[in-house]
Length: 112
Length: 113
Image (cartoon, rainbow over the protein chains, first blue to last red):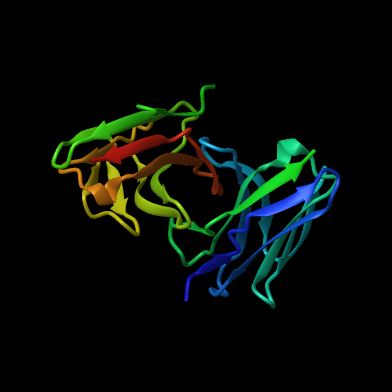
């Protein structure tokens, strides 16, 4: 079983839609959860960072962590064509040393 | 700040050739990482460093070597290139006090033929 599972998509939505991106994980010790956005032929850039359970909101983006279900989500409200990218989840725990565990990424296209 | 920079952007190697992928960061970060990204496979950690003079293996270190003589630079060396090393390579760094967030470079695309 992979440490982190992420549906690769592709996901295609009309402009203005609400987008839900998800990851599941197997290691209950993970405490730090991140979402990265990666545009084509670019490096990943940090979008959201959450510690432990709960929600975090930043503009049109909301990150949710449900540790009891080992499930994290990223919601994008009022999606824009500029949100078209691959979204990677990543996570880490106090006992995982210096290694981050990444999902495979979900490809999102927002159609004008 | 330029952040994390990588050179070259793209390179074609023949089987058996060697090369060094360069990575430099100007943010005074102690932690630096090398990843490879293959289609549908996510990011795999090759090597990482917690400071100058200290390096350690990640998940997929075979066929690669690293060194860290300064805080700023973390080069990745391929000694005998193989087709399996065709990939996109990303360097990343983190601040010591905020190790949970990584800053990535733009990547180096490598094709081994």
